[in-house]
Image (cartoon, rainbow over all chains, first blue to last red; front, side, top):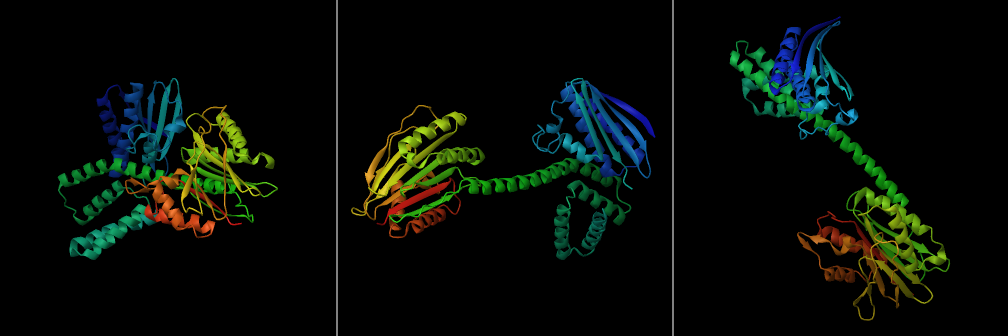
Amino acid sequence: MNETLSSVPIRKEWDIVGARQTGRNWAKDLGFGSVDQARIATAISELARNIYLYAKVGEINFERLDSVPSIGLKITARDQGPGIKEVSKVMKDGYSTSGGLGAGLPGVKRLMDEFDIESTDAGTVVTVIKWTRI
Amino acid sequence: MGSTKSGKQDYKQLLMEYLETGDESVLYRAEQFSKNSIQQSISPDEIVNEHYQSLLDIIPDMDDRIKSSFQFLIETMISYGMAYQEYHVLREKQIELRSEIGVAANMQDTLLKTQVPQVDSLDIGVKSVAAKEMNGDYHHFIIDDKGNIGIAIADVIGKGIPAAFCMSMIKYALESFSENQIFPKYILDSINRVVERNVKEGMFVTMFYGFYDVDTNYFHYASAGHEPGFILRKESHEFEEIDAKGLLLGVESEVTYEEKFTQIEKDDIIVLFTDGVTECRYGDRFIEQEEVLDVIKSFSHLPAQEIVDSVYKYFERLQDFELRDDFTIAVLKRIK
């Protein structure tokens, strides 16, 4: 069962902070521990910053996934930007243009439990899920 | 997961012991614990969190500001954790790549293998060592049905894998000559066309090609921009330079190379090498050519293979066992 929790538009840099805060609050509500809250917030930062830098405008959606025995937080980052031409390349470690600070999409993938990306010239959708630890 | 759980128990246990005793032995075990955690790729943020959780158990009435400060620290460590995990993956990839290059280097050795010819009149020795995994130097022997010997020594400008590819091509080109075509000028003219056609701009090859006629004891040679060779004359006990004019291989397609020859007397020694030998460095200083020749001379009483082995050992040691360039030296000693 999925339940949409909320959605945060990303238009300016400040919105990244808003998205982090919203994500952290939901994570806390769903029972994530402090490390996982921090990881979720960092992943949201990364996704929101990608939108802000490369697509200018987009949104971050939060959903609650009820499964047994754990609860999931599903985060969807969606934009109508130019898209990523070679997804497999940006998913390689060491590719990130942020100067090898361990960020980038591979970092997001590691912070979360599930990761999916779809990118066309009409935009990019990144979906990630984190499950509460049993 | 079970191992990390017990690892976490260990952390709390260690911390409690330390708070009670302040003992060095606990710190030593903490060091073991961190090494163990690294092996299990536990990231720094998890350790900080473990510390926080342990503290909450040990000091239940902790100040709220301290609690918040831990939240702050964990947040700060997350990026370190990501960088740390990326480093792990990259390191594994590097190990993988290195082993692949190792396989390629072995393959190169097998592909480029050449037999040192056994003939009555000459004692031949050769030593070729790569500075990195892949050798950009190459030597090749050809022997015709009369027992005449052709020897090629080449150096690709540019190192590593591209150089190795280029060398394989040159080897097959060299092997395609029939035995009665192994004259230096002819060979360099033809190889030059092969290199020019098949190698991208910016990659050049120098080559020295010599042909030893066992009937006349004449040594014919031609050079495509390669290091000059030397003959250590028995009579004078002096080195005589052997060099011929010629452009590097692969620069222009229609180049004709100069061919020269010289008489080789009994106990004369022909020495051919690549610039890895003549441009050995000792600290910041390049070794003078005379020094190289003096070293060769000092070993000249030995059999050919022992000469090249000794020269290599000498310069390997001089350079602190760290070759900066591929090193190839060949020695032909007339013994009859």
